[in-house]
Image: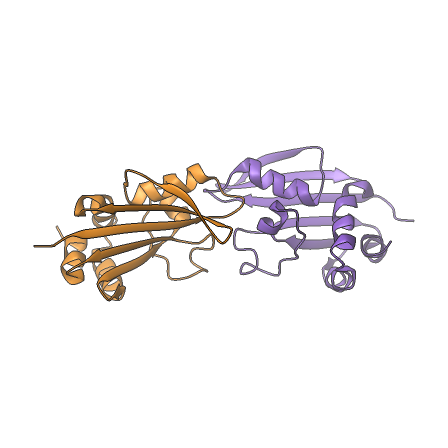
Length: 132
Length: 132
């Protein structure tokens, strides 16, 4: 079975953005209990942290519902860095409840939602996210 | 002298943006009496229109204050389309009171503020904006 899973989320809040709306975008993808606003060198971020696989249920549901399991599995397998899976999700799509993986600035011009998932077994985590 | 001058402004409001903040960004650059929110094929824009040179005083002041007159003149001369001068300004910079001309999506990822200035004499208009 999967051991301890740690989830961490970052989403930049650009000057003209609404903190509430960026939080909503994040929560549409990943339902954390608490999100805080942090300031990193004058740049605002919505930041959240949690432990446990249950926090990833929503993203799992979205992958299943949008029928992007194969694509997602492929992409997630390429997103493993050490013991972490690091993915970027389009913030604007997330706000309207759609999961869209973002490859870079062009695909997520307001800055993406970055999700880092630490796990003792990233491959098994990816299988859990993209099957069932 | 310069004849009738018509000013029109557009700024997209992305889903996670605040209408109030985008309006503030626009008003920092160009002080219009009224800004409305319009919907173009499901995309929201802040839109404003006015007649008269006085509405361009703020942008003129910013060009002078930021000492970018030569650059601005050059850029504006390249922005003449028929009887209009069409310029794009970085929305995030505008929100913090800074005038920064935006060349494309990369320099203004949330969509720029687009300003269209119609005038019988665009060259003279540009001289007015970038001198004095």
